[in-house]
Length: 414
Image (tube, rainbow, N blue to C red):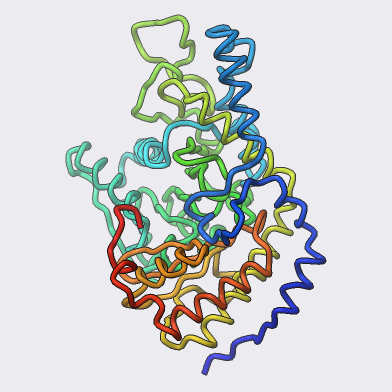
């Protein structure tokens, strides 16, 4: 029988009073009356974004026009912001560039990795990997004429499945449904032991959990900017290529900003040196400016303190809800070394339950087919908010507040 820790509202109040990260909250715009547990899908708005975008629009674009590519540093922005992300994920300067979307960057990473292992034809992944990652693999295999094969196995069977035929292993570090976090160092070493490359999707990791890509020997990684990095809806993504691979890494989207000399306008493509070759087209300056605000804010926080708070927030929520709602099935690991910064429960009426919570000003989200998902962004969440959210969910379940037609009508975005 599972033993849950009993938390009290007094515990939450005391932790808020002594929270070393408490001052971070004032740097975010959070609507009154809302408890936001969806930062794992879209982070909150940093207060500096509005002024920064106004500066870009009014001064840099409005007054200086095209000159701002040089004068305001627009041209260097992908590598400059990439270096800042590198500091958050345990990479070195010159190993990360901000560009495009996570899916597009994954396509680049996959194609580049396959070129580094041309004699191998197997791409290995977890059966429950994020669907778009699977789609990108499938699309690339089709584009390459079907000579490669995607193998999907359970995470428990992964290590045994890696073989001399494996070109690369692709995993999302924190599972988007369950919140389970994989052992990056161990799995990367297992891939390398068989001569395979390792690609990590950091969409639910970057800015939420401590990452040490170089210490773990990671080859390539991708991640998005709009979750725990608080870069705004549709914020640009990033790609990491370890320096040891950069000279041989060739990605197929041979756009002009990945060229060795873009403004020579040469008719033939010559890849740039270093991480710049992972770029393709012109960067989105407005959205990248907003992303940089979010990253700058996260760089002011101690990642170990963020992680400690995240684990305490999620433990209080999961134990309090699970202890009082046996109707819900907890699918997130209770072991703190095995979970990211989210908690997920299953219930056949999960969608309606989430809608009932949203109607009370508590925002979580739903993932098909039956998952109630709650993200814990320690940079701006209070312990007392999480306590209140847990009590609200208990009421929704116990009093069947979800059982209304309005809560069962599904929106296009869940």
